[in-house]
Image 1: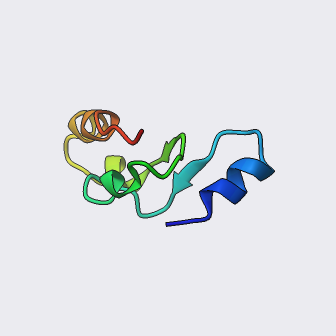
Image 2: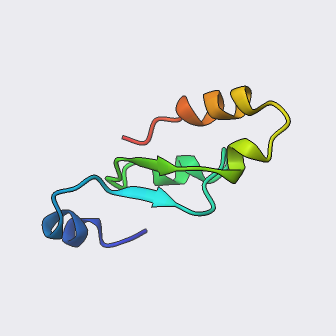
Length: 62
């Protein structure tokens, strides 16, 4: 996905994915070493924003 070892070695801050993250793409980040997601439209564009947020929150990436 991305050179996570190089990025991890270069920074001491959390690594967060942003852009194109939704219920379908979020699981693709499992095992990549990122610390979290920054999500906007995958939640706000949904009719039930609570359910959308809950669904994304429940995805485990580690």
